[in-house]
Length: 74
Image 1 (spheres, helix red, strand yellow):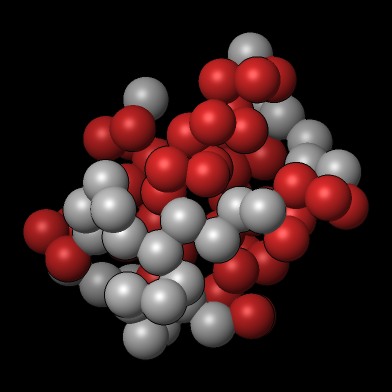
Image 2 (spheres, one colour):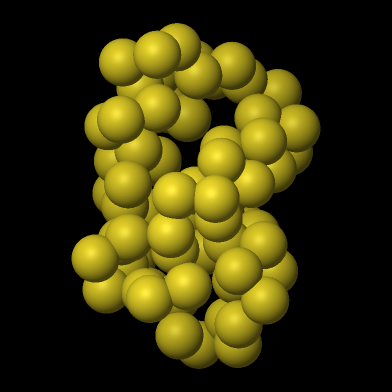
């Protein structure tokens, strides 16, 4: 699931997959700005069949945080 998420983020940010690592976040990827973040959230919701609540939106700024949220909801 983590690899699928990293691929999804690379596609959403329109960057090479090798640039997205398990420790990647909005602070390490310059393309991951606030607009890109919302696109990532929508893509993750569609792909994994989950829904983020307001608190999770602000806590989902890294691969590790996204993985934890996905695991909670599956």
